[in-house]
Length: 160
Image (cartoon, rainbow, N blue to C red; front, side, top):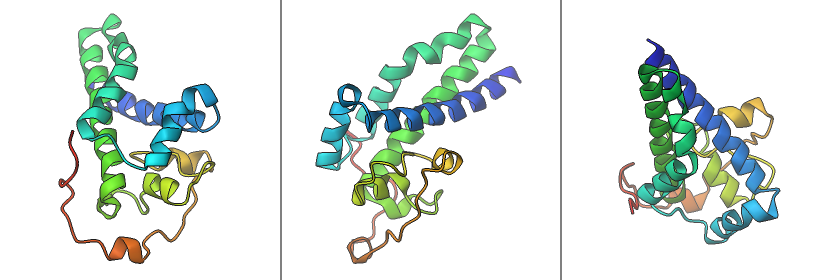
């Protein structure tokens, strides 16, 4: 049971950390340098490379619960890895096929880029924290550009 609880907490906490790190990248010149390049290019690295970066940046935190117990450690690690995989997929999907983000009313990361929003819509995979912290900004995002694109499946992405 503790493994399941740790999985859920790690998953939700990872989304919160991702939200705040993204906000920080918009105010810190040193931390945000690579992120500003990401905004200029407006493309993801590919799902596997995004996943690698998320795991590399958080692996020590993912392992910390092993000091409490094996079951808690496994749950915590799997929750962190699950969120990293989901976020890497969602990030790439929003750059390539944002209409397929069925779990959000509006693909916040896509809108964040499309309208060059430096103070709104910081979520990558989820929009929860934008709602909680008042940075969610609903806009009409499906313009002719999006509706004229050929239909693609949600798995037709750049994976590497």
